[in-house]
Length: 65
Image 1 (cartoon, rainbow, N blue to C red):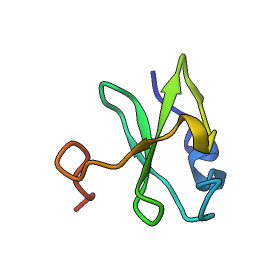
Image 2: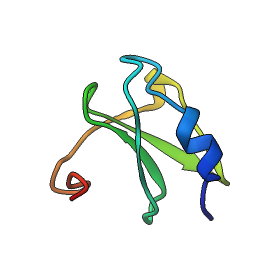
Image 3: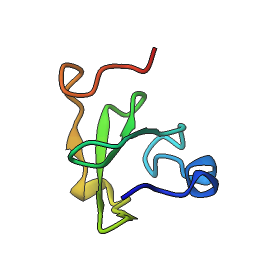
Image 4: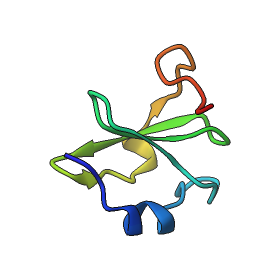
């Protein structure tokens, strides 16, 4: 499943307000480089809760070229 491009344009990290990177996965996630957090996407819905985010592992989600 893929997130709508219009949605990706307006979503920001709830912690830092920085833009998010979309990774189609699996697993499908949104990455915030500034906060170093990874937000899951479940059934096409981003889970944008800081408490539910996982720490960013650069090896698992390398920066976009």
